[in-house]
Length: 127
Image 1 (cartoon, helix red, strand yellow):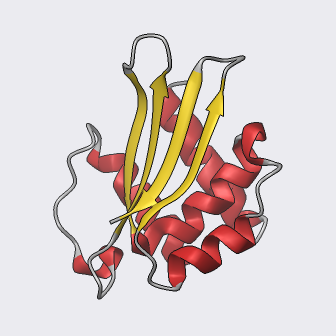
Image 2 (cartoon, helix red, strand yellow; image 1 turned 90 degrees about the horizontal axis):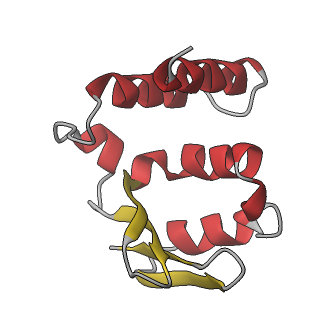
């Protein structure tokens, strides 16, 4: 099974489990179909304020990017639910508190975690 098909199944499972709504599932499936990280501007997904949620993971030794994800604020709740479910390293984070910070209108860096064991730095911020 291809990674894209696995992601589709995860989204559909979250919809079935009631973790996301039909609109959120539809938006995620459309984003997957866009591929390559290049998505046309869609104000309905971005939200009225035009802010974006960023997750940036870098290798401490080389400084190279491991992950660099930008998500329209309209999809942040879905992304947080996915992180809770599929990323065990986020299990200790209070996603409700993080969601509250994000929806309050705050901008800038929200979280910075350095994991010397894995040699990674994770930064989460809103622009």
